[in-house]
Length: 370
Image (cartoon, helix red, strand yellow):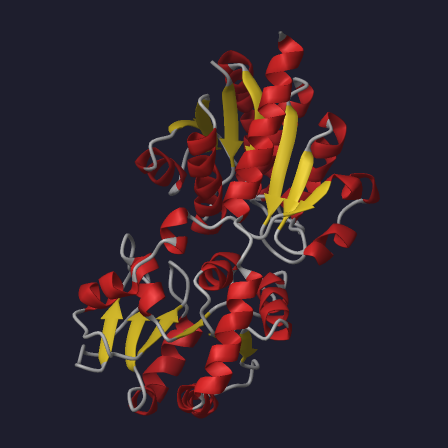
């Protein structure tokens, strides 16, 4: 039996797209899949729930600045390399697919040291530190870098640019097959309900939550507001007929998203590409400031330029947001045009494309071994 290794993690934004590729690969390929991820965090839970064998390794955060945590994290990275190398060798991996995150670097380095071909995917417009490091192992092993955006290739090292395939961002099949009627049934709403879905990511976003709190009297004039505020965020607004707050929506999220007329939220890669897969118009509030490398601003700008989203500036207050929502609510022509542009951006099935290429590479590997 041929074995294919996956790696990546740290956040759902790294894990869920990888699981989307794994699910498609299972459909196309009869081999065994396993995942190398962090000993801590959500990695193991999400991967094992998807029915994939999981191996944990030590992991340390990669930083662009010095911190007292840099030293112990350095030794965790080294330990992660040797642990991943042992796993890859023992499990006889034919190739390794990385979905990024700091935990993915030691397995990619370990794979390269064993002569195992490395494939990686970058969800954001500009490659993160992990992808730039993993690109070296892609080049060394003659693997491939998959990107969500065509423009990302010019931001990668020159020696790897001829190994780039634009795939869009992998989105789980459940989103592409989501049922709006099931979403409205979950929410207890009728078929004619107009829904504004507010998303701040799985952990919530205080800025968006505060904006919604202050603008809510205006927002509910046009929409029933479904608000995922985040399990780690304080929330004190009561549920009403026009306002439905949830700490976190999990299995039902694809259907709820399908039921939404408009989505208001951050512009993380997972959010914007899941919306695009369902052709949803977006009103985006990208995360900015010193705590981010600017990836959300770039994602938002791309979808704005494509005509799929409108972007609120960093000085936008609740009145500006409420006005933007009202203008979209009252102009069906604009909403339809945005929805069409969103669907066009999300038309490529990234999970299917990547899985097909990985299956082809695996077949070539098997023929060479024979």
